[in-house]
Image (cartoon, rainbow, N blue to C red; front, side, top):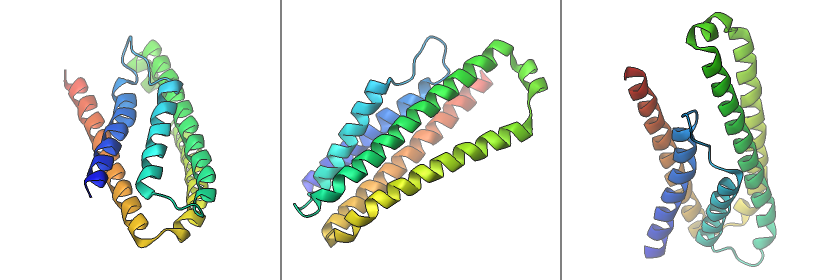
Length: 174
């Protein structure tokens, strides 16, 4: 049980660093997003933690490469989204608030948002498809560990997003 608590703490740290860092620094003058190398390192560390927590049996190992590939693919897509968002924010800052409001096209915004959500949905489907064969072979204790790490990671991501929103609101009131 002690190892599971330590694994959860590490998951918290890794999740907080990757999500929180990329969100709080994005768009701030003079700062860069998490580099592709950093994001790759965080992704690898999360995969290693997850694999370690699951304690896969030899017959389950054959399913792991598909999961790694799907997670790494999502990580690369996340980096591309962050880079695109940084470029968009930079472009908006160049034009100014009033010019952005005048040029805003809500239909284009909705279409861009729909496309982005469709891409993320397809990526998530790919991840679910990669997990399905392994999940079906997991023992009850492995499923509990996976559920614990999943709930913990979701909780931490939600908190990071909420913290980012608070920071943005604080910046708007200054």
